[in-house]
Every structure is written in C-alpha cells, then in structure tokens.
Length: 335
Image 1 (cartoon, rainbow, N blue to C red):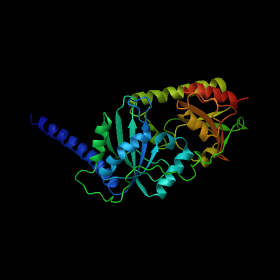
Image 2: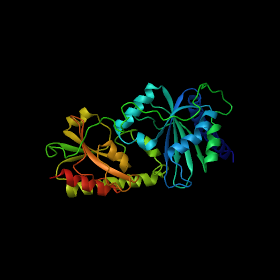
Image 3: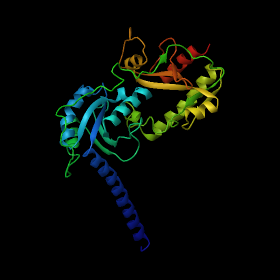
Image 4: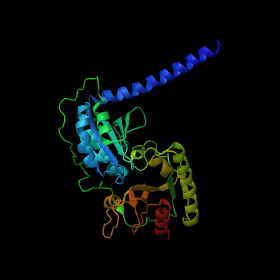
C-alpha cells in the first residue's frame, strides 16, 4: 500500500506539470496576441451550411478578435497563401515588413464546425512552425465569436489603435495573382543526363506545416496521415517504374540546392494542390473551358535547380487524383 501511494502522487504530479506546460504555451501565445499585429488566414469549406465564404467570416469575426485584445491588420484566404512556395515567400516578406507578430488561423469544416489557432509568426517563409499555440473549437459561429472575444480575458491589451473593419491589403508582387515565377509550358531537356529528385513527405521540414490547416485535410488522425504517406511512396515507386526510364532519387531529408546538384540531382519533381482556377492562373494557363474552377486538384511539374526554371508540360494535366495527375504529367515529359 505504501508503495502505491507515491506512484499515485507521481502520476498526479506529472499530470499537473503537463497541464502547466500546456497552459504556459497558451498563455505565452496570448501575451504576443495582446501586444502586436496579427494576420488572419481563413480556410472555409464551400460545402458547409449555411454557406459563408471566407470574407463573410472575416466580417463576422473581426469585432470578436478586437474585443479579445487583438490587432488584426489583414485577412487572407489560406488557400491563396499556400498556393506555391514563391507566393508563400511573398506573403511572409510582407508580414515581416508590416512587423506582424501573430498568425490567426480559422478553419471551417464541411460539417460547419470551426477551429481556431494562434501561432507566433515564424519570421520566415514557413509563416508558422509546430509548437505552442492558442486553440479553440466551436460548433457554430456565435460560439466561435464568444471564444475569440474572451482570448485576453483578465489581461491588459497593448493594442490600442485597431481597425474597425477587416481589411484585405494587396501583397506587393502579387497584385496580378502570381509571384513572378516563370512557369514554362513544355518538358525540360536533358532528363536523361541528370537525376530527378522526388520529395517525400517530411523532406521539406516545416515548409508544409501551414498547409495542414486547409479545411479539407485539417484534423486527420496521425495513423491516417501515416498510411497515406506510405501509400504515396508505394504509388510513386510503381508509377515511376512503369513510365519514367531515367534515374530517380527519393529524398527523405531536406537538402540545399548546392548539395543536390553536387549529388548529380539537377531536377526536382514538384507538386501543388489547390483550386484549379487558382493553380492555372498562377501558372499562366488560360482558364477557357474550365468547368469547375473550385475543384481541388493536384498539378505536378519539374524544377530545374540550376536556373530555377519550372516546367509544367505543354497541356494542362491537373487532376483530383494525384496518381492520374502524375501519370499524365510524366507521359508529357518522357519522349
């Protein structure tokens, strides 16, 4: 009996310590929120009822965020921010220029439920990084606004001059919807002479963390994500063995361009996923005949590291199924 009691106390102490650490993380994030500018990124399902696009949600939550002690200076749709690495870098540079301290994330799922997070702005192109954050879950909009308005409850906010209405300022370099990256509508040359690197999930470090907050993939169980990652590698290996006759290298860790080139890898297979109209516009592809501009598709392309050229193929081949998209793209670039 005497041996059992200390174990109970140890377990209780461990739980208290864990709770204290979690509370500390949330408290620290709230302190930043109450003393610095915030940018709000919204990902809203078009299938949720009642229908509300991201700007409607921005109008709804802005008073609650300011009542909670925040200083939200800009609102953007998450899907636009994560459209490509170049676009994300442009947003990050703008956030740094505006001295942004916090990134507020709002997700609305297909069932109408809301999820919100506040992360410190990372200061780099990743925008946020895994770690301490304020989080809330709400079943409806009114409950969400109540949660947001109580963020700074019992604390003093240093944000005194805040916007009365939400604003959507343009990001320098993105006024036309692109990030001045050259997408070339043909196949790259010399694929037979150099290795093609294939990025596997996790090889890009925290670069894709922000993407996990997109409404259609947010909240997936870890086991499901792991299974999908394993299936992706198996599928990639199968497709490349069937279609691609040249040498490929699967990249399981992040490496610099110089390291890759030194290993004989001058080409990298790249992938973007997003609304089809957004992808086409960002890549300079005409939208004529597009039946469903809002469908989520996958588009593969090849990056030539030496000159940072992006080759997308002569014809548009994006597809909701990544395997179909990859097969169609490889058939274009392999003679």
